[in-house]
Image (cartoon, rainbow, N blue to C red; front, side):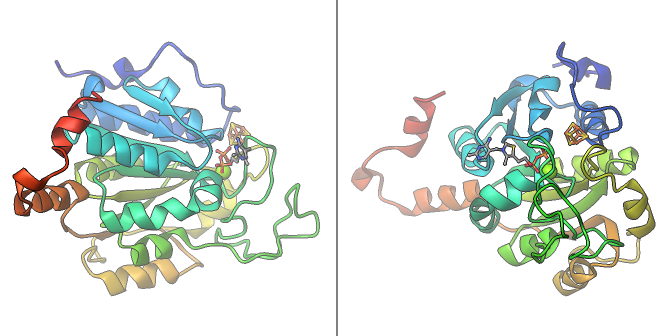
Length: 288
Ligand SMILES: Cc1ncc(C[n+]2csc(CCOP(=O)(O)OP(=O)(O)O)c2C)c(N)n1
Ligand code: SF4
Ligand SMILES: [Mg+2]
């Protein structure tokens, strides 16, 4: 494939997000990243769930799979296992990821599936009109217990999850945070995450202007990680993740370890071909 400028990755479908929604910038940064990495759309699959954010694959040239709510990671794992040559990217919202889809995250992370998981976190269910999500109230400056949503008119009464800390303890080998209002840094984070071999997670703070407009609170809470943090230091990464007063932006953790493909290859190398029920590669190839 010849080099494609960022605008060439746009499809004919125009995003129907509300004006001011953070998701526009999340998408724009992805066009730039694809262009900078010279991504071949014919060898790329973007898998999404259900939500405003999960519409993203429709707007970018690649194969796309708009799955069902919360089931992105099993589908993406299957895609990657069937064809390890593909670049596999997963996009979705905080509800899709941490509520209905929450049970899949530890397993994709600990298996170190070589995919990039971008969660567009607006701390709310946007598509279904503003119910609480597992991250409602987690953004700095608001604190939990004070956030009013359509399902919590007297304030949020549940403690929010901490996605960064979760990803670290689950064993994700790349954990980063970006912000839709910092598109240049977001592009760099995508580049690093897509290049990383293994399970890469990026939490993108991407406000919903209709049900949870938090640009001011996020602007007041962000601090870029510039040089002073060693992303290979797990304990330092965990300290940053546990600092719920600050939204640290950048790569919080990155380490190399065998991917799921590597692990399967090493099992195949040890097994006796005569005794195998079937050749995995041939079985997967039959589905291509
Ligand atoms: C199995 C199932 N349960 C519930 C829904 C309704 N539903 C659609 S999107 C959504 C939540 C969306 O929130 P989030 O994932 O944060 O995405 P956002 O719209 O905020 O980008 C829900 C509950 C559904 N489509 N399918
Ligand atoms: S409802 Fe919120 S999340 Fe959905 S498109 Fe509008 S601003 Fe974005
Ligand atoms: Mg959401």
